[in-house]
Image (cartoon, rainbow, N blue to C red; front, side, top):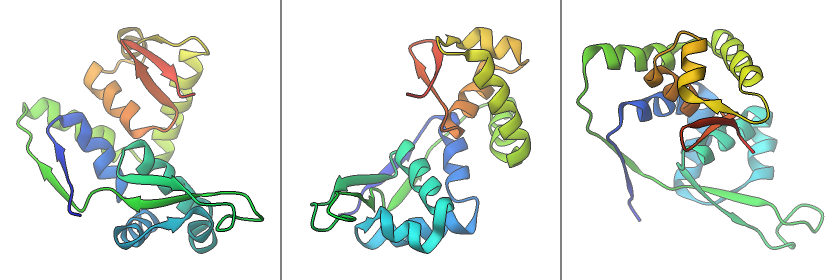
Length: 167
């Protein structure tokens, strides 16, 4: 079945651009295009990088999951299987140049700089979370840039207007 992911929010470009930013992510996704693949098979072939790719795809809703039966699992325990949810993308975005430049800046942050910023935001947000405006102001970011960072990260989510650590 052919499903198309429609992208019409500029901040959705950030995770999409990062979804295929290295060879492992690209190879894992290509394997999931055809059939269901168990976590153990991805781990065996790609290691922790493959598992991280699956987590990222799952967060972006690019893959669907299902549990195996205990017989198909590992040592009698069920495991997750993954398959690509989409086979095409439709990107239709119109936005000001300053907005798209912020999106590309967030998407192209190198891993070290992103990880440093992510850690600082994680510590600042704390257990209870903080309002997004407060976080953006504290780190001299626009709300758009913060939203893009959150979409790129596996550590955060918005709960209403509040930025929280992911459960």
